[in-house]
Image 1 (cartoon, one colour):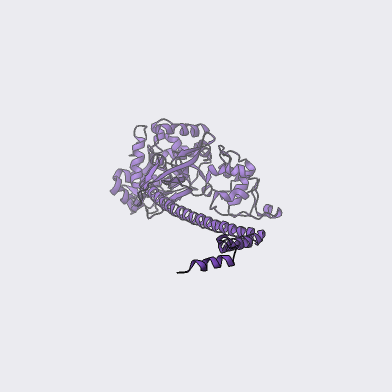
Image 2: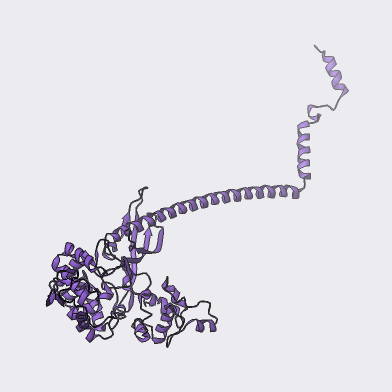
Length: 494
């Protein structure tokens, strides 16, 4: 223990000492740090902050870009899947329509309503068919498909008859076609290089440095008419509600002859008789054979009334009949009393040549007039036409192009047929409201006479085998697809 004297001695040795007079080291460190901070340059501190902010912004942009790209890629993938879904639906819709048409479906009635096509993923597709057609000079959009036989087939127009005026008449009934344009179109498709009186051949186009020259053969598409002299885009394609020539003309219309039917114009008359006797009976077989040999009395009258009608190029029927009568007592092959040595001089142009007609011919030793087993009165005409159509055909071709549809052709197209009366064309157009089962329906409903149908029957059909339309397809999310489709069921293997 220190003595009090010692303490006093220390105090007395440092008379000014107190505890507060000792230095505070904590305050010294704080002072030094404050001095260092205040002495650090302000510009360097700001630069560091900017760098940090820039890095943050770049990272944010990179993240946003990545996210946007990922979303975009996901959207593209979704659209591709939806597109593939629509394409599969398109194929399914077209296959379904083709099967329906091959079953003799009605191109308008059977395709008028929208159709829902089920798919494997449970999302149905809505299908709608639409076509454009001419009605009273205006272009109308309607549900269903269009029979291409509603148009005039350019490739079926005769261009080698030697009568340019009558050939021109096939086209001049159409709106916008005058004699000059008609000749130019026919020069474009005929097989020679000689210009028609008002036409234009290769020399005309080369002299004007045209790139396109007349093909001088059948066309593959109506669009090939765009380069014909005098043709304009408006005249060819029309406007929104005004039809162009493309709505009146086609190169694809054709018909399919169902297999198993008897060719009425085959050269082997014995075979013709035998086939008809088995399918339609002996009276029908005898009458057809008589017609092929001698023609009908009505045909002779028609030729006197229409001197420019389609000619067979053979002698007058009575002259031919007298010339080809067999000599009595000679041993010649016969069927039903009719000599088969006589060639099949006359062709059956349409079923109307056999409906309600009569034939004068020698049967055995008798000169007889045979009456058709297919009556032609209005009450029976439709049935007679159906009975013939079930067993026989007038064409040896499996696929026959070019006839015009009574059900859908506008009056302006019907008037293109040789010498076709304008009033009859309008009457046919109006009669469709009552329904046309077959061409003979025009006799049954009083629109046309049997004589008129004998005259123009070879150019007319009820329905062709090629159809066109626009497919409108929409999936469950509303993604659309629109496409123009052409159906051809004329193949022999249908």
